[in-house]
Image (cartoon, rainbow, N blue to C red; front, top):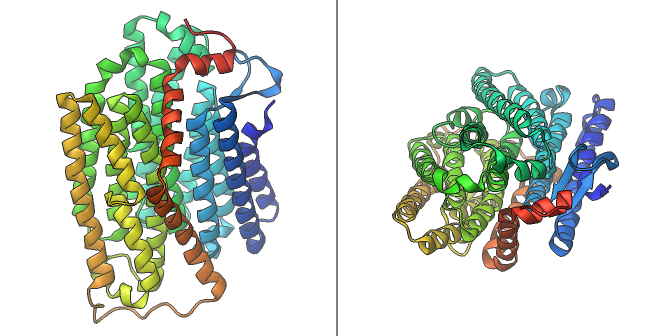
Length: 503
């Protein structure tokens, strides 16, 4: 058994158990949270290095063969997603030491955060289709409780929408699992990939639609996205930063994994539908963002819009477009988490996140202003930041395909980038540049150096990553290109897991 594949799940599980033993000691829980995040970040780095140098890694739990036991599999896509999880976990853990109040700590914020990370890592690494459903449910339970901590009415309303839609998603997913098992008597994903072509096209088509809707809800794509804006603007910044960086990415990851492994023969049939979904997701999300006047709601709608770019890369279905989609996942996870962390500091320093109540933050908080400007321009796709390379990769892939549908979705993506820039400039001018309102609430009292460090160190850490991915994109581009090739190589995945050649 390869322990390196299991540790990203075991570490948060054990940490959560330890936290429950010391649930009355807030300082100890914070320390355990940061230590666990550091370990997960280091493990993710080691896993990525091993997979990049040695190829796909497989672990059969209990020594049972893949067709009968539970299998964990790490290819480059899985390793990159675990790396993203570790990065966001580290930033959020440090940030939470000041952002999470005593009441939420008492209600179990820290163990729930570890449970969420365990669920995300489990989903990224599992090679078993039913266990992918199980990890989704772990995520759903942990994220729902994190949303309702605090018991405020708008928070409860958003959480109810979130859990209702995601329960529907889970029901559809479980239905697909049942149909698959009843049809091919297999749950291991590599085994399903071998047996699924034997099924009638009517069954595979129905399965594809079920899973597209199930994962589409998780990923918040059009028209299944409306739970996200109502859920993302009320909880603490730490919670939303984790959600924005990881939750929708699990849905997108599952879509990439399942459709490339199971439904490659249906690719041309599904392409037009998924391209339409991508275009509408980009457009509706960005128009919703432009219409908002509160920082977190603007960012929430942009979370929807940016999912459209990733779906676009998946829908174009070339090696270059899938590589662009994977790059975009990494870029967006870091950028959007950072923007929500920045919004938390804006609320702390400015007393609000409503644009009409903010002003002159660039004078009072020049360092925060600089961090926001860099991150916001990356979201808009300006060079030389990470967002530029993410969008350029997708546009180039679409131009290489050269079909009218590809040109159409490229046009939508470029127009959406302009509106994204407009909404980011709107936040800049209203919150950072304009004079402070006369009735502005007094600034927050001075805080200790440790709190200042916890506020700004995670944001600086993520901002540096954004700049590095922009100035030195080639290492990441090489990794995502190789990850895309692995993802499209069904035979290589089956060979690594089952030890047989795919016919």
